[in-house]
Length: 372
Image 1 (cartoon, rainbow, N blue to C red):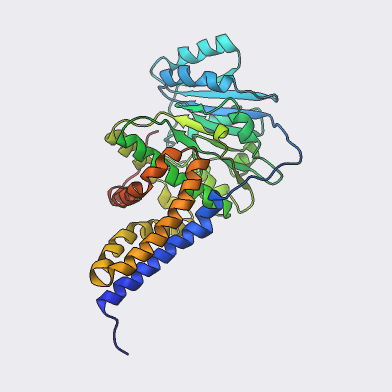
Image 2: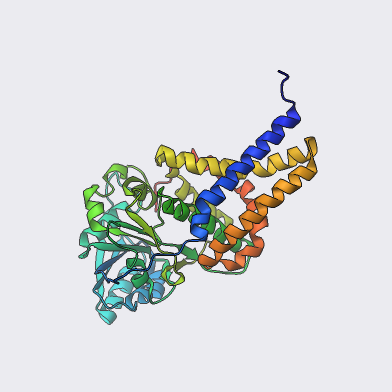
C-alpha cells in the first residue's frame, strides 16, 4: 500500500480540523444559540445575599453600589461588602453609603491571612456573614445592567439547581482594544455557557455568579484551592458543578457591566491571572477546551497549506461552509448576550484569535500571580 503524499496528509488534516470545529458549533455552541429558558409554572423570589469584595475601590464603590441598593426586588435582600485591607478611602465611602441608605453589611478586614492569596479569604468572610441561602456574587467594578438584575439571576434557581451562571459584560467604548476585550469575553462566555447546557460546566465568572451557601459549606469552601492565588470562581465551580445542578441566565437585564482595561499591558496582566488556574481544571474539561482551541488555532494554517499544496477550490468550498455555519451560530449568541455590534467584526476577530493563542498560551505554564 503506497504511502500518502504530503499533499493528501495536509488535506485530510484540514478536513479533520474543520470537522472538529463544526462538531463544536453544532453539538455545543448551537445549544446556546437556540437556547430558550423554560417557563416556570410558579415564580418564586428567594431571599438573597449579594456579596462584593473590594480592595482600593473607592471610586467604583461610590459609583456602582447604589445600582445594587436600588434593585427592584420584593423579597428580602442583604448586601455584604467586604473591604479587604484597602488603603484608599473605601472605608469612608462605604460607611457614608451605609449612613445614607442603611442597607449594607460592611466587613472591614485589617489583616492579611497567611498562606491564602487572592480573593478567597475575603469572599469566605463575606459568605460567612451572609444571612441567606442564595448568594449572588459580583465585583466592585461591576454595575447591574438593569434594576432587575437580582430578580432575574435568582429566578434561575429551581428544584435541584445549586449554581446559576450569568454573563459579565464590558462597557462598549471606542477603540480597537475595547472590541478585542469584548470579543474575547464573548468567546469565553460562548464556551462556558454552552458547555454548561451540555452538562459540562467547568467555570463561572465572579462578576456575575450565584450559588447556594449550602453547597459552599458542604464542600468546605475554598479549602482545597486556598494554596492557589485564583480560582474563587472558576476552580470552585469546576469542583462542585454536576450535570444537573447548574443553570444559566442570559437575559440582557441579568447582565453585569464592568469598565474594561484601557491598555494592552493591564489587559495582559488580567488575562495572566485568569489563565493561571485553567491548568487545574478536571481532565475532561481540559481536553474539551484544548481540542477546540487547537482546532481553532490550526484551521487557518491548514487552510493556507491545503490551498497551496492541494486544491484551493476545495479549500474555498470547505471554508465557506464552515464560515457560514459559524456566522449563523455566533451571531445568534452575540444577540443573546447583547454584543450584536461585534457581528460585523466576526471574521476578523476569528482570525485574530490565532494570534491570541500564540501570545497568551505560554501563560498556562507560567507561575501564578499571587494577587487579586
